[in-house]
Structure formats: C-alpha cells, structure tokens
Length: 477
Image (cartoon, rainbow, N blue to C red; front, side, top):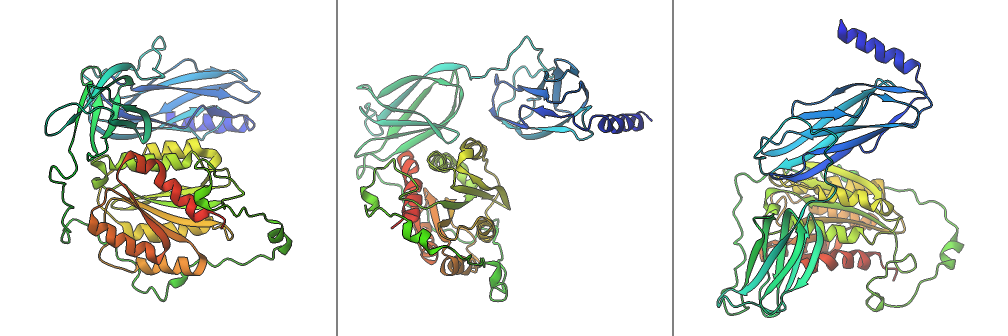
C-alpha cells in the first residue's frame, strides 16, 4: 500500500511540475584504486533550476553505499549536497548505481560510483562521515626516494632518466644525482616508474607508494654485458585462448565490411582554392598540428585490455600514448574506442577533440581482465569507423595490443584489406612490448591495411610514436 501511495505521489508531483528540473553536478564518480586510508566518499551537488520549490523524496541505493544529505527542500536556484560513501571492507572492483528521486520527475537522477578496492581499510566504518569532514580534493603528499644502480656492481648511476607515470599520465621526469638518487614529493597512489641510461637496458618498477612504502630501487643492466632476455617462445595454441570465428561466408557478407557512401556533388572550385604547403612533413615543427598541413581525423581505437596487459607497465604505456595524442587533437578530430578481452565493448563513439577531458578520463579508467577476442574486435571497429567516415580526410583504425589476436581464423585479414582498398580506411597496430614473432605477424596484417606497425617499449616511445603515426597518415601531401 505504501509503495502504491509513493507511486501516486510521484505521478501527481510530475504533473504539477512539468517545467521543473533538478540537475546533478555529475552523474558518475570513479574512486580509482582504493587503499587503506583512501577517501571513500564523495559530495554530489544537486541544483534546482526550475522556478518552483522541489523536494528530495528518496534515495534508492545498494547495500554497500551509505549517504547523508544537507537538506530535503530545494528553493528555486538553490542546491543541496548528498554525500555518498562506499563500503571498503572487501577487496575487488565495484560499480554501484544510486537512484536519487526528486519531486520534479518520476525518473531518478542516477549516480554511478566505480572503483577498485585493492586494500581493505583497517577501520572500515560503514557510517557516512558528517559534513564537518570534507573529502580531500588532493591526495596527501609525502616524500619518496628513487635510486638507480648498476645491477652487477651495485654502484649508483648518475644522470639516469626517470619517469613517473600514474594512470597513464607523466607526473614527473627527473635525472638522478651523483648518488643515483632523486627525491620528490608525491601524492599516495599506484605508480609505474621507469629508468633509462645510455648503454644500459631500460628497467621499471610498479608499486603502490605511501608514507611507509616510499623507497624504490631500480637496477639497470649493461647492454652486451649481461644476458639480454630472449623473446618469449612462440606459444602453442593455449587451451584457454578464445579463438573468435569470423563469418565464414565472407564473400556473401562482404558488404558488411565495405562502407558505401554516396559521393555528393561538390563545387570543384573548393578544391582549386585549397592551399597546400609544399614543406615536407619531416621539416615541420614537432608541435605543429594545424588545418593547413593536416587533414581531419576519424580515429577508431581497438584496445587490448586482456589480463596480459596488466604486467610490465603495458597498460600504463597504452594509456600514456593515447593521452598524449588526445592532448593535441583539434575540435574537428573524432575518436572512437573499443576495448576487448573475452568480449568486445564499444566504450566511446565519435567524440571530438574539444571534449579532450572526457576522452582522457575514459582512458584513465581502463582496467584489465579476461582473455583475448581480437578478431571480433577488428570487425566491430570497422562498423564503428564507418558511422563517422570522412570521405576526404583521414580514416584509420588502430589496434593497441601486446600479443597475437585471433590466431585461428584469418578472415579478419579480408576485412582489413577490403576496407583499405575500397574506402581507404587504414589499419595500424601499436605493439606494446611485443615479442619478435608477434611483431612479424602484425607487420603482415598492417601491410593489408595500408598502415604501420608501431612498437612501444618505453615512456619516450609512448610520448611520440602514436602522434607521429597520426601526423603521417593525415599529412596533406
């Protein structure tokens, strides 16, 4: 009976508040990786943009979410704050949906709370802290020490270059002093730290750093002095690898792989008026990415987020390479993203460069899990690419992966070749720390798609190589 009365109340409230509108400050919040002592609550501000007084009716939330609110009555142009806390008593990823009902509508304002509890809190209180506590806008900073040494002698290495990467962004770039050391202040968090020096092999450490875990030592091996690790042997077909069967009736369904776009009648004078600078690409400044020299881009990324990408900093290098590219895109450049492991998921379609912050946050939120279904991802990516096809500009599909994909069925090669031959959609592959036999296979694939194989093994590779590929393929020659 009470449920019926509540439904009736919502119905009549909606009728009499047609013009009412409550807006949330944001519809989702990613807590990222949570460790003991991390902030586990967030304040969401709701504003009444209507000319009528509105009311907070109820909050429908999962068991592991707790809340308090600053008030229930919203006068015109006023706001209330709802503080939401997640229970961090159990390790693992979470994705909680909280529905907040106001009197302006029978449709709730839904807030998505996501994150990954890596370390259970030592004092996991379930009550939501009151408003006398303020969520920290910035993580608490502390001092860290990083030392780079020779792996044989243990001697410090002077002037070694050290990069610190967090969630795909460089937060520090330093050179070691005469004692092989750098010291700096950092917010607590999970970091990918690389060290490099001429005549040495690069090395890295991945670690959660806090007040007690604040020392990192990175040994570097000299080239040709110690045994260089051999490439991984080509594996036999693993029993747990997912081999995706692409449509065996490829000839009958070839139209699925080729976009047919009617050529619109265009004024030939527009081509006559276009000015092309004859300066070669290699002579242009590195920072230049303008409309005069470069076509607009329709870029579709296929991102390998299988479990193997969670080692040796591979996911960090993937994120870093993409974020560096996104920072230079123009408003007319569009980005789509698919991720694949055991299944393929489209996570973003045709988002333009003037929404760079949104794209970057999506990249930062990538997580790894599952096995590999790359062949299916390729076919899906071309369908997404066709939706934003630019007839006179640069259309390119880029797969970023650390290994082979769909080594059983080879029909995806026809998909790659057909789209390039018929409509000029290029296919390139970014290999993250790939073995030699993987590199050879990828080079065969990109040859069918008119693209390139780009090998990324270091932070410096990630900072430049993907940008170079987009500049090369979009350059107005």
